[in-house]
Every structure is written in C-alpha cells, then in structure tokens.
Image 1 (tube, helix red, strand yellow):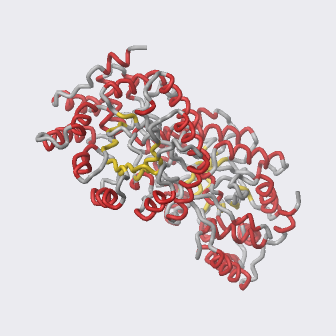
Image 2 (image 1 turned 45 degrees about the horizontal axis):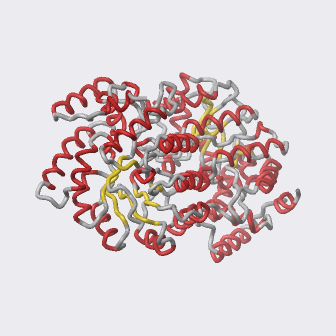
Length: 307
Length: 307
C-alpha cells in the first residue's frame, strides 16, 4: 500500500476536431508529465473522464501502457454510475499493473445511504477479484454530489484492508482531511489541490492530485520533496500565483489553453461539451498573465511534436 | 411531434440475485403496464437506468422490441455523461421506431454554461443523424445537478424544431412548468409526478411521467382521460393517497417492494447499489398501508408468472 506516486496530475485529455480522443497527443503529454517525475491520475475530473465512454478509456489506457510508460506511475479513474462499468475499468487497470485506481462513488443517485455506497464499492471489489487492485477513494462532493463519510471509509478499510489504500480529498475542507489522517493510520490521504499540499503533508498526508500539476509539475514535485525544508512555505506560496491565474477561468479549459499555447499545439485547447473552450480573448488574458509570471511548460513543445 | 404516450411510467428494472438484469421479468412488467394503456419510459431515474451499462440498456431495449411491445409506446432514457453513450442509445431507440427518447443532460460536470449544454445536445442529435429521433428533454436538477434554462430550451427548439419535442419537468416547480408551456407553443410538457398531472394539463401540458405510474397505472390513465370531467379533482386527490404512501419510504425501493408483493415475485424487490432495498419491517408497513387503501396491482401476478 505504499506504491502510489506522491504527486499526480489528473491528466488532460486532448481531442481531435471531430472530438475523438487524440491518443497520440495523450501519450506524449503523459510522457512529458512523467519526465517531470509526475504521477499520472489519468481519467480524473480534470481529464474530462466522465465525458469519455468506457471503451475510450480502455483504449487510452492500453495506448499509454503500450507506449512503455511505467504502470507504477498510473492511477486511472475508474469510478462510474454503473457498477459494471467500474468493474471493467478497474479490472483493466489492475491487469495492467497500475499503481492503483481513483474511484468515484456512483454519482447519479443522491442522498444514498452509507450502506448503499458500501455495497457499491464492495460489489466492484468482489467482481474485480484481483489482489493487485488498490483503491484511492475519490471524495469530491461539490461535483459528484456524494460525500464519503468517515463511517463509510472505516467500514471499507475494515472489510478490505489490502484494497482500500487511501483517498483523494477534493472537498477543500482541511478539517476533514486532518480528521481522516488521524483516524485512519496508514491510510494515504491526498489533497485535491496543490493549495493544500503542504498543510496535508504537515498533517501526515501522502501528497496531492492537483489540476495544476498538469501545467506546473516541477514546482509541485519540488515542494513534495522539500516540504520539510526551510523553503517550504515559500515554495507553497509560489504555487499559489500560478494556480490563481488558472482559477480565474474555468479551470479545465484554462489548463488546456495553456498546454495548447506553450506546447504549440492549438488543438490541445479543445474540450468536450458540456465544457466550452476559453474564448480567444480570455485565452489571451490567461497567457499574458502566465508570461508575466515567467511561467513555462519546459519541453512540452518538443515532446508533443515527437511521434 | 404528437407521437408520445400521454402518461408514462419510468419502468422499474428487475434484477436477479447476482444483480444482473432480469430481462424476462422486465418484458413481462412492460406488458402489464401496456395492458393498462401506460406508456413506457424505460431507463428513467426510477428504472435505476444510471446504474445500468449501455450494453445492458441496449439488450433490454432489444428484448422489449422482440417481445412485440409496440415501439410507439416506448420512450427510453438515453442521456448520459458521455456523448458517445448517448449517441449509441439514441441511435438504437430511433432505429427501433420508439416514440422518442428522454434525454438527461450530461450530469457529471456542474455549473456548466447553456452554450456547453447546447453543444452537448447538438452533438448527440447531429451524430444520431436520424429524422425519427424525437427528444423529450429531462429537467431534474435536484438529481442531475443540471438545470435546463428557458434560454437553452429556446435555442434547442429553434435549431432542431423537428427533434426537440418536449420536456419532462421533474423540478416540482409548477411555475417553471407553466412558463415553459406558455413560452413554447406546441412543445410537449410532461409533469414529473402524478401529483402535478391535473395542474399541468390545465395549464396546457401533455401529461406526466411518474414513478407511481409503475404501480398505480389505471388511476393515472383515467385522470389523463377524464381531466376535463366533473370528477377530475377527486381523481387527482385519489392519486395522492397512494403516492404519499410510497413517498414515505425511499421511492424506488418502495415501488419494487410493492411489485414484489402484489406480483408475488419476491425477487422484484431487489435494487442495485448504491440503492438499498426496504428493510423487511418497512416493506411490511408499506404493504399494510397499501392494503388498507384497497390498493392492488390487478393481474400483475398472472403476467409475471407467464413465460
């Protein structure tokens, strides 16, 4: 249960002009992130994973593995509304030797009981039936509409101690994060944003899975490594400027606009509906602000243009 | 655009003990509802459709059609988070000659723009590319987390006048229903609950798609037929007793418990996680209350036991 990367990006998913997945660019973007020592939480919220079909996710996972990217770096999102879909994705991830999976609860039905959520996770685990499966629970109530309670987490850890490895806490509620860390020793708690990386580590957490890790990987990796050093507060503060610049816009579209600009790959800006790309004027504002901060995505252009 | 049934049930989906779909019981339950002159909104919220994979829905649709149930009675739910899934389901429904489809917006990402939602619906319509496709938009913000605005509806009707046929308004907000009816003449507005059937019809609406139409079809069909008669208010009041009895419990589990009891098919009570079946004690309370109201599901046992 110590096999997860310490910081991970919910990897952006590039699309062609017919909105199909651009597998080649996706693999190259994964390579670029890996070259920065970033873990790859492919198929997260910021990956637009819930706008992909199961087949599309399986195809992209296969391509990344075939490309020789180490599966120990991969933590694909495999949660879905339908248990059958979660099982198929999780089986594929476990069989590919991925470090683990990031699992949303089923998120259509609201106000469901802990008993029902427990049964949903249990059903997936039992059907996958693979001891290699390691799960990070995905707590993002403001998007999924489903909060994971400490009672539920406790019950899952007790029943599946070798499978339920940790949680991505995207609630933004540092108190919840701290309580989770204290209450479940050995359980790996990841902040859902680099904004809370240092605080999470100081509380005994494992790291973060952060949208901006897609564009600012080196600085986040550095803070993870040097968080006990004298510069930790300054490194954390440095992340804030970049993050706030992105968060002034719809985040996924802004991240993709930056990858498009700094990777010199305009197609990368494309998103799938119901999201919309940044209007040109906003994209220009974003890029200007980033350039003012001496922001760069070092080597991305080279990596994306290689075949 | 006048081809939809006037009242429809979001048809309950029975499961076997391994939680797989029980296609035979599903077809028989459809037959029973059809024998009461009920339209079949298969794969709605109360069908647990979002807990089914696309493949499971395609298989059930095929079985219903093969069983000889008139496609003119069918309005399958085909909305999904991923456009590709919506396209596949909607194509199958159009090809099967269904009266139309009930389409949720993509519901994972929240706070999306009308422009993004328009693009999502447009993409599905364009890719299906079948003039037989007739869409009821599905407005259920308290579950999907996505409200469909009048501006969005207007834009969709203007662009796809032959495809965007109406809406299921499950918001419970009668003012929204009335405004929708007034603002878009010819647009077919369905109440999301039989509680608002008479009020919706009086405002110029088309009918209802109601959870309790699964268990109380004859009385709802009767009110739809006789809504301008002297007994309309009494008929509407009569529906309330039954509905409230179900709504005292988690509704889907309660509807299935009733079908299990009155259909003498205990397996029908099963639900898929994250939902949970009624505890025995609550199931007994429900059935006792229903019997006190002289409630019955006339002929269901016979239909379910026929092969």
